[in-house]
Length: 119
Image 1: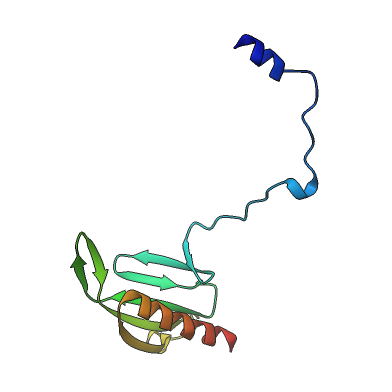
Image 2 (image 1 turned 135 degrees about the vertical axis):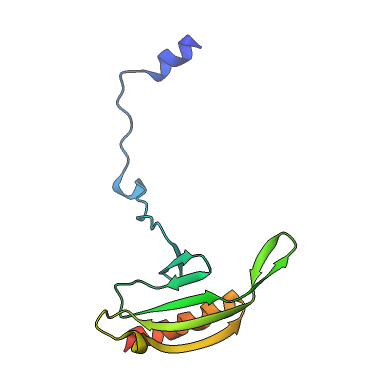
């Protein structure tokens, strides 16, 4: 064992990596993302999108059911919200709907958000 360690500790410099060989990792977001936008959950409410954008989607899970050992969302309320602090609370909700299942709601919300941010 001692001989193997001595062989590895030679005075030769380590081979240099070429510029293309170095791995650069992308900065990690601390939020789960869907289609490049953050998802933030608080209880039964999920916000989709960045609060710095003009609009975000708010998903409220209205009911859930047990499927074996996990809870699965049932009816989900979707709202397209204006993030402008100068807009009155009454006018913050731009669009709203309800869907059965989280995926269906998130899919519709993603379309609404994409269209609203293009304007």
